[in-house]
Image (cartoon, rainbow, N blue to C red; front, side, top):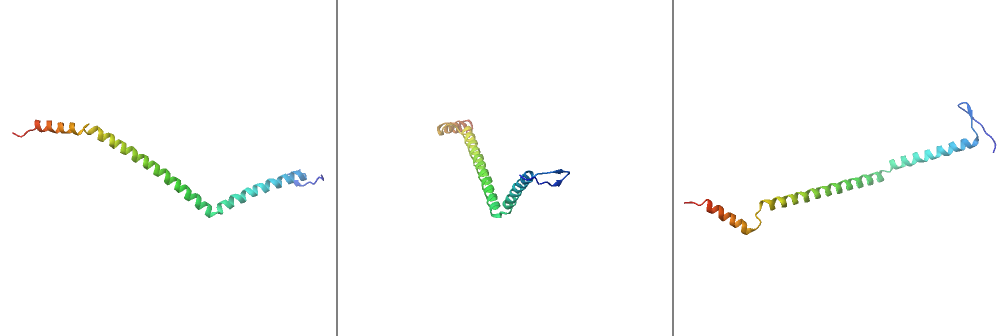
Length: 104
């Protein structure tokens, strides 16, 4: 290979080094063009934002559903705690209170 030289920062470079630098520059330029192209794709960005919003809404829905299920379970538990075990027991309790508070 013929040796071509160029003066740059006090040194010399051969053709192979220059070709490697050109390839590296091309790669970097390709990456930059791809990044700019992606940013300029408004439709793609809009779809991504819609997708993110849907995912966020789905997560919030699941959290609300879980919270509602927990509240329902707590209400059932509390209702069982304050409710007599059977209607018969409730009737007996009412009769006992009536006897204790009878009107003369």
